[in-house]
Length: 413
Image 1 (spheres, rainbow, N blue to C red):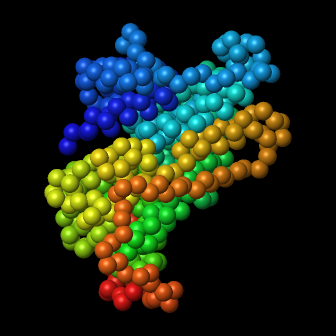
Image 2: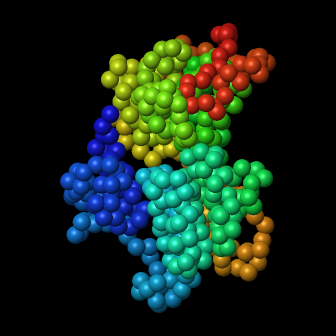
Image 3: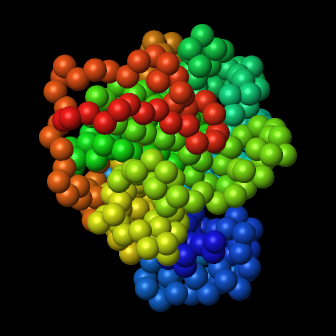
């Protein structure tokens, strides 16, 4: 299914705003569209005052931050910062983490550090050579969000990333307990709480049968799948739940031919809703959510009249023809907090040797037009309602990549 024009242009904006300037040819490669298409998009965004265009380069239009009165004259004049460079490494084509990078930048620049942004391609192990190059160029610190499509990819990074030799802060990545990275500073969103907000909102509207359509190719995706499984299994009000893969190919690791063919097939969300009698869905991430809602509309399923939908990420969720209610992790704030922690390490002798810090920020729920109260909604279940048994909970584990479900008989609630 072709990506909607407005979604593509939002991705262009996110890429340009996170980096300051990007060549049109680079954007075309990252978006997997023609240079002509990107040039047309950039021209339209320029006419709308959202970008600047010059000699094949798209530039951000954000104003430069005002110089502090006590800032050195060289910094006010735009000369390189005196504190040296900090490497900022994020995956390509990842608008969510570009917002985190955008949040980190002003903190680092105000502290006198120059930001050296490195965008890692999708190939396994792509971050390591970028970090090594940044260190060879003199980077004094590192902010990094590795792609980590699988647990094996994370394990492969443990050794070298734990020994980079400069203060390092992980963004939106939670190392495995006891691993070599367990003692790194971490700033991340509490995705368990974000899923709780979504499920609690839907249950409060009377929905008792809920599906999760989520990716399975990032630490965030795996956290969301695990949290939904745990929360849905524990909520006595939820009579039936299911987990499915939201996007073709959004699963790591080698696959059997049968599994690969299944994972390449677009999710028929309407059929999944019918199969479980579901009246609500949580969809991760935003692009997948908007495409799935578009597909529902094409099949005659109305949102929110027939199905309430909550998206997870809130990068583009508000731009749908029906603006989507969404869980909004504090993306820019994650970057800002990570940068503040790194500055603390770099700027104070006691900071470099201080205790390791784990900072966890809570997402918000932004209610829009894609959720509504279910007609004839049941009351909330009492605290004494029976919980799901262990066997039923295991049936809905999040470790698999195909649909998985847990259910209980309908309760009088």
